[in-house]
Every structure is written in C-alpha cells, then in structure tokens.
Image (cartoon, rainbow, N blue to C red; front, side, top):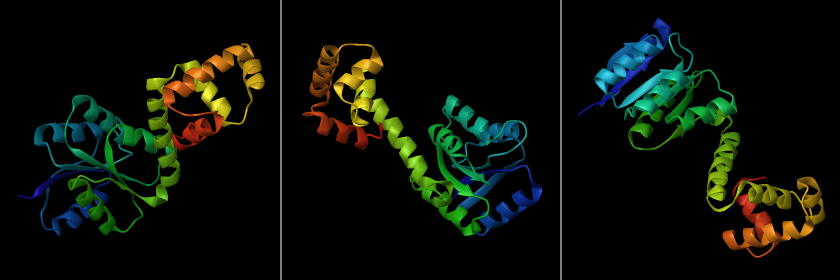
Length: 212
C-alpha cells in the first residue's frame, strides 16, 4: 500500500513541481495539494495522510501555526517542513511542535524525497545547513534542564550553574545574598541528589547536560 502525502505551499509552481517529483516515486501517493494553512488543516483532518510536506510561510496560518494545531489535536500525520531558512529558535519550536523533518528549499529535490522516506521509516531529517549544531545544543540544554529540574529546586539549579562557571562559595553567597554556610548546605544536598562527588564531578555533570 502506498504512503499518502499532502503537499502544502502557497506557490502553484512549487506545488506543481512537488507533485511531479513525488508522482515519479514508487510507493508514494499525493492525495491533496493545499495553498494555505486552513486548507492544509482540513486536508490532514479529513485524509489523515502519512506525511505532510509543509511550507513554513503560507497565508491563513503559517507552517508553525499548522504544526502547533496538529500537535494540539493529536493528529498522527508526520510533518516535513520545507523552508528557505529558519532561525535556531524557530527551528527548535518546530521540533518541539512535532516536525519530523526540515528541508531547505534550495537543496536538491531528491533530498526532499529522502527526507520523506526517512520520516516514513520512523527517523528524523534535519538539514546540516540549518545550524544543526546550534539546534543540538538547544535540545541538549532543554533535556538537561528538564532532567535536572526533576531532582533539583530552582535555587539548587542556579547554584549548579554558578559552580560550573567557576564561582567559589563566597562569590555564590554574595550573588544570592545568602551565607557561605547556606551555600555549603545546598551543595551537600545537590551532591546527594545527583550522586556526584564534589565540584569537579558537578561541573562535568553540568557540561554534559548542557546547563552551562
């Protein structure tokens, strides 16, 4: 059975090119073409395609807005974003909202096909030209913060960052308007919660989790 695709772009010429590209591919079937956000949402709701190839900039709800709506409604369609370029924060927002692939418009068309097939296979596709390292750091930081927050209070997390940045207890106490003794108590609790032995291991933990 062919995998089904919905294509969404506000430029008819681009839509024509995308449709021709995928119609030449075995095992892929284009079931709808959409030119704005609302039309795209209606198509995904009614057709439940396997993959939505989605332009980021469209009228009637841009690609990120469509992504957020799909996530809120719990629709299972996998999304591959097609874009001329995204800032790191926009890229992170797209990944948070469930985008499984991001492809630059100026890349070779065959890469889009590869991205769709990768996503269909359960993988993720991110173009290197989109600042993959920066995104990796942002995602690592988010995961690290979430993990640390499960164990530490906000004040303890603040102290972890200060220790990892090289501050000694006296400097930490001065910045937080607390005593050195209180800093030591916090550090003892932090070491216990994270299972680390001293400042060096704590610094390595913070670096590994992207907290600094």
